[in-house]
Length: 424
Image (tube, rainbow, N blue to C red; front, side):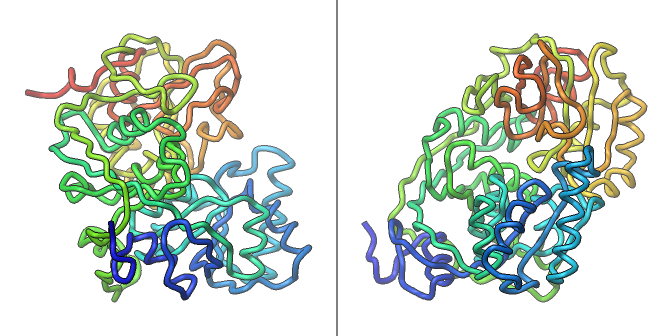
């Protein structure tokens, strides 16, 4: 047990600062928000509710709008929503990334809107991705966002911390997506309900910021209020590239004697993991589902749409052709990541292989744009959810995987183990 006078988790420290009070897990606080983000689906609802409260936002510099779910507009309704947000952003002088920038959870950290120790809310459930940089970030509803837009504050119950210590070296052919799917499978969809899921251990220290984003992004899939990783030198370098003279504050880490529950996860012998229909926690090792025929493969999303993910997919595809019976949609997570992939020659390789490469957006992940699955079709996706009807027909099936599994499965037309393609 901790001494409450001097021992806290990262989350307790962030909420203590944000509420200007000495708080711990279980306490209710009225906290100041450092950044508020909304997208083109949740934003219009928040804006309409905001105008019922007031007509001026609390601080235009702390609000960010990103268009990604239906971007560019794929219907008249979407176009009208975009117009509403454009008018609001001009009137209130808030930061507005229109249809050209990409997925909100990539754009936010990429453009320097996330710092270690921040309290960030977003009107989207996967806002927890920013915990990869040591921020406490969580998704909220559109009505709550309206309150934040008006006041800059929101009430919270400070969450208990579940610390997941990763040990062991990541095996060849296994990636951060496999790790988080494995953890979700063990925890269950509600195993970490309203908890701050903190990833730590020697394995985490070796992961890139992109890897960490993948893991924190999916904390919500086990019920987590947030996913978070203590900032380190890797984090500091990433933030410094965007904010110049940023210096890491060593305060924002969990004290050893703080109150939290610790779980150990040894990944030394982990195999590629697959989330099977129709729930993210229905996770099986690839050996149990290998050979499943696939109609469509999606490589992208805020979970696995960065250059590192695209590079993994490209390396496995090589100069080979995609199976003629599979359609492959590849979408970089942002304009910046798209340009990196373009400069690296990856886009050229994907197109020659037979894939469709689209402009940065959520794409099939949300099921509100292009690339929908029809009745009876089977999709394999590097995104974060496989709920019934998530990518189209309620009679379709969605499997979730790493970019490596997606790439080799594209070549074979069925779920395939990437370890079989590794050079020994």
